[in-house]
Length: 108
Length: 120
Image (cartoon, rainbow over all chains, first blue to last red; front, side, top):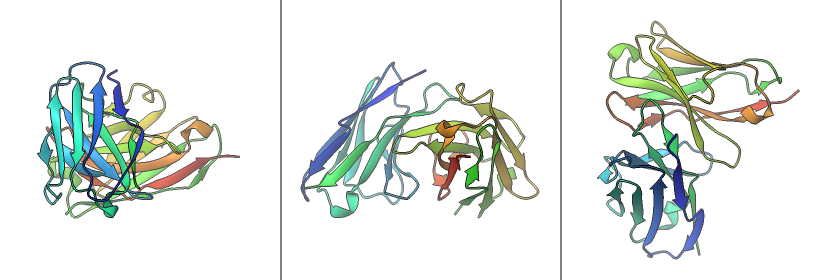
């Protein structure tokens, strides 16, 4: 199984900050990686697909990059509404999808 | 826009079978455009893909749950279902149904999720 390791597990940042989350795959997954946002009590919401493509309707403050085994997710100009847990998800070895452990983002 | 809604008992006794149904609206399961998935979130933990089904009835499962999970589809009702047998407290989780576009690797539409507690 492909394991996904996210870091950090939590972070605290100020409004207006730029923050970056990293997801590392246990083996090469090319660009087969997505990013989701989950707010408390809600279902995850797709933000980025295929490592760097912004889902329709998602603000351009969110971005993703990377390929192979290391991927990054960035939020520019952090807003209070961005408080959530963010998950990466790989789909290289279908039909088995796996998620990272999540990164909880809080506002200072 | 596709909408999904989970339904089923919120409390299941240990060793029994968990049964959930996902009703799809705003689109047809028979369109063939999606795989239909079950995903769960263990308390305070991350997300685990359980399995999926295509409108034809073809299924795939997470190897760790394959022996206990069964997913079925009822195209006449535009629903698909999950059965998880021999449950234990470790199966207590929020269960989501979600759609995954054919040929893609992401999940675009999700149900609101339903909490299932395994307890006597």
